[in-house]
Length: 203
Ligand code: GRF
Image (cartoon, rainbow, N blue to C red; front, side, top):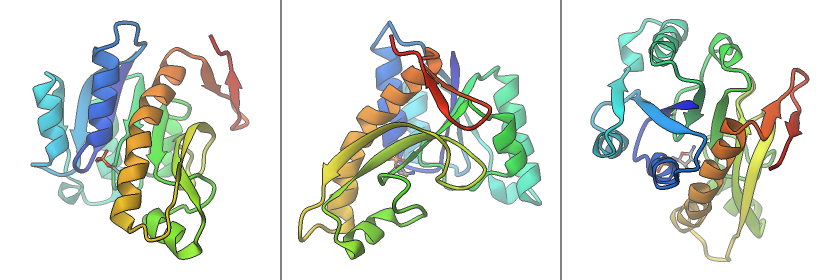
């Protein structure tokens, strides 16, 4: 399956996806396009180094969210992308776009959903004094950080953790979870159903 990855920044998850889909010849997924809404970010360099086509589609060049999302959709369909991965993509997508990619778009969120949705999960985790956090890879639904869960990984939260120390610990498991979830979807072992649930055909 051809995979398009949307990023906004450093792209360490993108790197993990690249590493797992190129080093492993058995991969069902191949990353063929990386789109960033910001120019000059490290993730674009990572893609270029791997010989993957890159594009910058800057949201500031578009009048509204619909027009921006239409430009994304056009780029992805022209590249014949089958599956979209949101890997640190910091824009909220319109319902229209989400529906077009229903069952074919994955997001990673750095908490154990459905707990700690939103843009600052690590702050919320530390504030709440829970002792376990982690990451979630899920199908993208219109409601932010909702959608059927594909893979989760947990990490301990230590007393004295800062947002940075916790974010780094969570990221190390993100880099395992995202490639695993992509493989499950690309190989059709995890399929999103009309009712929003996942059917599993584990190999
Ligand atoms: C990750 O923590 C991801 O869960 C969140 O944004 C961050 C992106 O990091 N959605 P990177 O660009 O992959 O390093």
